[in-house]
Length: 161
Image (cartoon, rainbow, N blue to C red; front, side, top):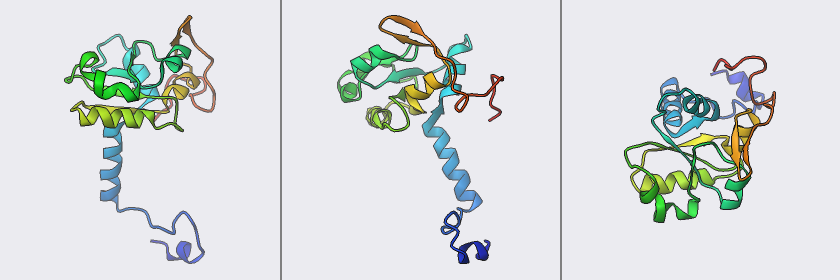
């Protein structure tokens, strides 16, 4: 550890980084709990069976405003009562809500996990689905916006990550 960085008050290194083994365990666990918007879109658009279902945990008004094509609508507050009628417990569920500032997908994922479902949360939610330029459905029909260059690769379908 660079003691000079600590001595100068470097706020980034005030708390030293985790050991490589602890970091590997943490980041591995993170990938077990989260899915990326682009990865979800690629799996859904591949033409093959994705091996999961997508669940929109927002209100009906939000669902009508726009949702991921093929998603199941199940508001967070109704998960405990309605999940068994809508979801196969053998199929992993990817939850989403509005965006990174909303924890509705996290609450829905918790409720599903407590019911015995395998679940991941889609990072970025519906906001990043739209911002990355993926097609979505509204009450009026399909829509798509131009990708925000700050959230999607410019001129390439692959961001390299």
